[in-house]
Image (cartoon, rainbow, N blue to C red; front, side, top):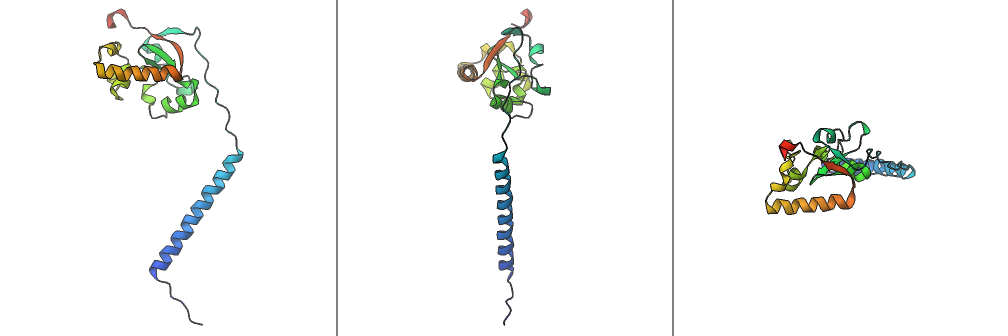
Length: 160
């Protein structure tokens, strides 16, 4: 019987197919295991008492999602509880892509599409130009449609 010498291409191809097959089996076994597991229902944090209430920016900063706390974001001086929904907590929470807005009056930053701390907690959001104000109005409408209102931002008299 004649023996067959494997070429480099055949060895690489065979190992690649085996590797992909192993990864596919591992992926499928994890997926099957997960389908049997049910995720616990999301329970939002409690609302503040009283609700709605006034928040200074210092008080608002406490609601940044750290240590299981609620996540509040101010838009046009209205404070929204984004943690009332799991997707809001995931999106604006400490590990979320927009976590920098948590616990802040974020109107200017949202309108300008910036993540800069210098544009947050500023009472002068209403001085933005028309284009930015239109963008801010869209953000406000989105927040109002999705999240619970828990209060309003109050500014010291000298800041207004």
